Image (cartoon, rainbow, N blue to C red; front, side, top):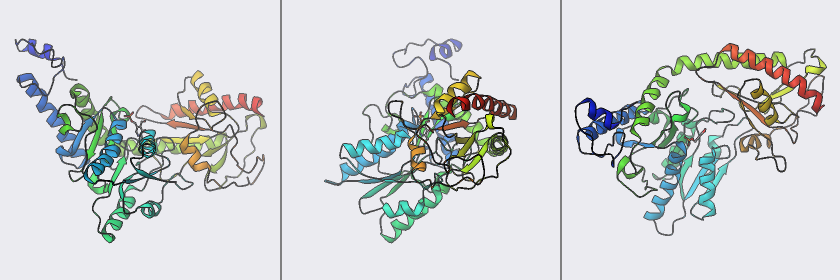
Length: 426
Ligand code: PLP
């Protein structure tokens, strides 16, 4: 964490009389402390670029991924509109993106600033790269697909999508279609080398990296013709004017480096915990299978009073190692979160949409719409694995502090809660 200018100056027997510039180091000041701050920022940018395999001049520090995503999408759309008169840009994304992408697409469409295509994911929560390619047309300028979903943890085939776009560009002699990815959820576990992924723009957020705090990163390949969204100073190459949040940026870079260093080890550890979590869920409850496949495990002799079923939402293989997302039919997931919280377990829910009680998860909606119903193979039966009005989803997302003991306690709590709730809901 960087010290305030006042304290730094005092230590060197200097006097700090530049409070109007900033209390913490301001990289735009030309005095010694300002220049030192500038050096630190330069190093932070170089280190971030090196992790992403980018050039330092391609790294823009932002407030978070929401800002990075907006800069990518709106910055590109406006750049094309400024350059080409009466041009209506066409942009493509999927139906499970984070709100900072989906809502921005919606906004641009509503304001008649862009034509929009939303490609639905398959039942396993993964988009088909060929379906993305099929949507590309003459005026397409952008494809934006998240690397891993924040609710169900499904990993999108970014390299394959990049390949399809490259193929289209080659056949159609186009060089002005750009590919953006939001790697917020993937950053701790997956390869984020921009050259290997084949992306032109990338967004990430410090808020999902242990110890990194509130900083965003936006990578933009030098060839992407982007315009700034805010007017102001020329910080961050003019794309993010305003005094840089150096203390937070420095904190971010240290944490980012650690997260990359321990990535493989942590991925393995969490995968084991994820397997253990699923195994324990299957031992305690009746596994209806992944929502999309219809596969069922044979029934065991469950006690009627503790009997509960669950689906897994999203692909079981192509999934972040820290994500468990299930639906327990017939029981509102908000209620499960509250009950778990009362037992000291913090998870999260997205409810199904029931008039007046909040919004449905667009991700669960996206996969349940295409879920084929299937018949359970054995008793106790339910209606062919159909979703009901109250079904939502329950997300457990693990991190660096999660242990096997935590999972044991969570399963035990779920058993107690479901035993109680089943009496009310049956
Ligand atoms: N994208 C994804 C996939 C996210 O999960 C989030 C936050 O949860 C964001 C973007 C927004 O990030 P930020 O809060 O840094 O704006």
